Length: 315
Image 1 (tube, rainbow, N blue to C red):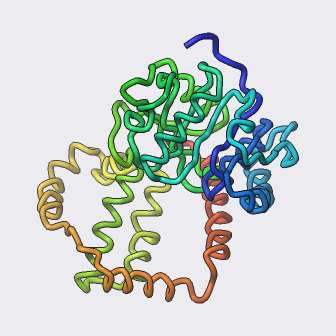
Image 2 (image 1 turned 90 degrees about the vertical axis):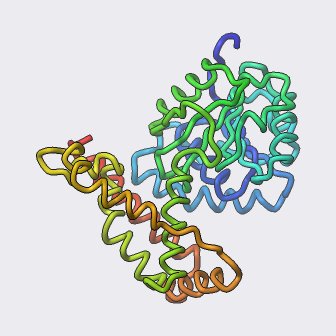
């Protein structure tokens, strides 16, 4: 790759939930943002999402002096939207054939040194970059929802991606206050989604086997491991669980029984009947509140947790 371009204008390709959240985040950081989506009705949705996100971004101190929602424009034509941008955040539907075609279109429209970062939640960049002329600049930049609040971004290249592109992407996200992690190799679902999937599989299994209700399962997480995991990952959690002897002591005494639990973990068949039980369970938990109302409560709590985390002194 040639000289690294100065990034002033960012294209957000796809104006769904993730794309709209990315747009709000990049606007807060003072960029000019162009959002492109073939559905012209998306513009109103994105603008509304940015408006809702803005108070949270200000509350977290994420807005710079030059930040303004008015620095966003909507352009339904992809090629026009990509004119003179210096970074692309792609958020198209999670379908491989569509992603391959979309990345090829983006690749053909932007300068060879422009990073194309995909928010894909589980596809491999090696597959997605197959038809690109300059595949070396294509990377995964997978956020956690909602991207304007959650710091994590998983970064990994494909077989044809250059290490320079991965490093540039890591540096870019880190400079904006994100917490990127660099995956050493591709794997379906990346890292964080695989962790989520593993926990949810066992959660579904426990409900399916009649061990616990949907509501009590969620309570077991939010009032137990979830509180610790907001501060420490699983390895450090068990390091602390080992007392003065740390993880070595924990593994010496608990690893054997835990391996027996692993052998007993479930692999549920999530048929329609089980899906209905799960849907009914979360609807009962919601108590009549809409997804939008529940998301607002979640976001407020996330902000308070994040502000508390910033005040801590432990790693």
